[in-house]
Image 1 (cartoon, helix red, strand yellow):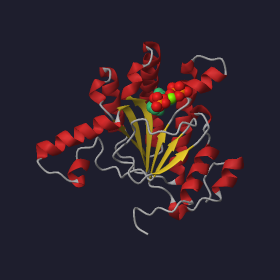
Image 2: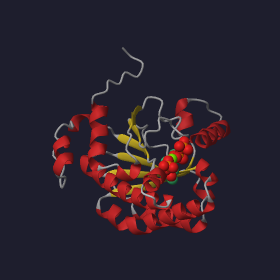
Image 3: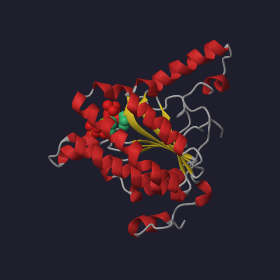
Length: 243
Ligand code: IPE
Ligand code: IPE
Ligand code: MG
């Protein structure tokens, strides 16, 4: 397919994309920022900075391609056990992202949503999240979901508790108590940096998700790499237990 504004190798590769077979929801574990920086003799946080720019590019491309949901794992519950300095940097990066990105999101008709235990985040960030969600709520082109202070097991416990309170036990009832009940399950999960694990991301939702592992470190993950993942996905046969 033709993608507006795309040039070079990425545009060439995009010719192999079938617009009829796009994933509706792509989830990404953006991993490898620290290693990217360390390889260059830089402090780890420089990798996070570059990683945020990569996310911007991938979001823009996903919107142009016509993907409807993009979930990006930005900060896990387990990431609180990192050095305080790195946590502070990541929180500041999130502050900056929420402040600076909103006009672009609005312009590109992108709706921002956050999944995770938001109430455990610093109060000013909670406020910025609410403001960004409110400001972008009319966006219909792409739903950008940031997973922040997110853990799959915590989400499962939350949903189990909700179900118990409701007194109905079924997959449908469970789903009603997820952070974002109306978001369809991911069709494709991409993890960068060569690690082949799920790291407590979307445990319930990935039951039938296609997994794609890229050796590329997240800050280097390019438009070309994203398109490569989509083409790989389009070559898969999804059976959902049928024959
Ligand atoms: C991913 O990169 C970003 C977050 C987890 C916040 P890492 O910081 O995990 O980078 P590596 O895996 O140590 O290289
Ligand atoms: C997963 O990456 C979390 C995010 C990308 C936010 P990690 O780097 O925290 O995961 P592990 O520790 O390698 O499993
Ligand atoms: Mg990592």
